[in-house]
Image 1 (spheres, one colour):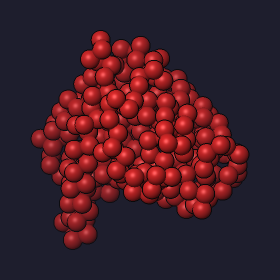
Image 2 (cartoon, rainbow, N blue to C red):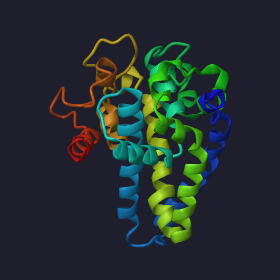
Image 3 (cartoon, rainbow, N blue to C red):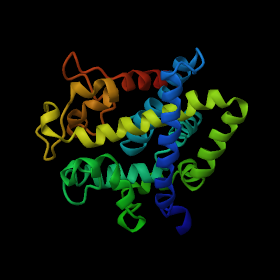
Length: 263
């Protein structure tokens, strides 16, 4: 049991950064030189919705880290798969970092990716600096009791590699634009968000929280509803990050409402 609970994917996961960026750059190059298939945009859009919107934004972030809404087991497993193929670590690593450290100690020395330590630290380098001993599963003990989440944590790398390999064997172009490019985009969307939504110069605040979180309309193009970050820090368990003003649109919340109806 102790081995299952170890957040032991950290040293391995940082090495995924190289292939994630390499294949993403190759995909963008083929698009720019007009060598991509005519359907690349639609495949990438669907892949991005699955990985970023459903897997990470709705799943890892709002459902598992904050318990903002409920789903049945089939939907839960699908969301876990979407999050796993995005290559951002297991659900336990993501949730304990976010819930247990970022929210609890936002913009302090215990916040692992606060921009107060520098832009590039927040954007990327914190992933190379953080170590297993720096994290605890105590903040996510409720998630640890869930057998499905434990399975997806324990076999995270297997699920990630097998899923990507199977799609690549079906069609390498399908994998590039449906899996690899969305993974690249999702990775950098969250890097951009992490490094900028705690910069007071990037937006405004609806809530006087103790941290530096802001709502940044400038970042909507990149991170969609996740850009209303001060709203999120003000009401952590609210699944709708937008809605405080008419312009605060949250597409992830639209998907959550659809998921609730399916559920």
